[in-house]
Image (cartoon, rainbow, N blue to C red; front, side):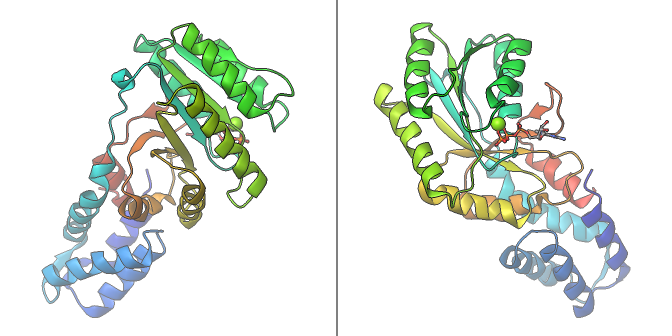
Length: 288
Ligand SMILES: Nc1nc2c(ncn2[C@@H]2O[C@H](COP(=O)(O)OP(=O)(O)OP(=O)(O)O)[C@@H](O)[C@H]2O)c(=O)[nH]1
Ligand SMILES: [Mg+2]
């Protein structure tokens, strides 16, 4: 799937004695794979300790890296149990185009297939046609959508949440407009929306998920830093993972924030949503 990092590792190691030059090449490779400088150095240290001066194949290097990376990302395999509380409410946030609306469509379908009653609230009142896009998904999937033209997102979430609760929905999913975290007024709007949910139901939102593009590289890390400074984030969705060679950022992301990745998506189809599988991620990354 990713291929790139894996095949480049193969080009450095060919069974010969591991020397400092090879380590330097590996270090450069890891850093340019968005694994972050600090994490790359830690990985290099382990490889050095285990193999310096020994004959080493690319496969051996990959297995050492796999073990170390798995230790970091395995804890991110979060369980998303919507039976925890009723209604279970989710707010999707993130920058423009990260995949919030599409993920909501896929997730609604998945939950509906699990027998849950799902209500979606269209709080992206910013972009023209955002509601239409979401409505197409919810119509296709067969879940209800609460929307209103020219509405303030907080007022909308207030009424939508109350209606969904009155209808005894199991899960309420809120779509929000894409925004940059340094846009103060849009950030304040998001904070207000989340506060409003908390006023309607002290348990809400159950999960606020930051949706990150799997191709985002270091920029995705920056997004977490900025959104996280303003809003309590409970976990991640990583999108567009098919063919992504810029998803190394997931390693420092988890290392730094220690939050679950609840879902990954890998296509535009309704079924292209999966639980995060740490081992699959590492195998794809290293081409194992
Ligand atoms: N290939 C691929 N495309 C995806 C995936 N998820 C979303 N997309 C596409 O990415 C584009 C943006 O997705 P949206 O769901 O509209 O993103 P958004 O975060 O709601 O965007 P805004 O509402 O503008 O902030 C669309 O063309 C989606 O079809 C994925 O996993 N793989
Ligand atoms: Mg959207």
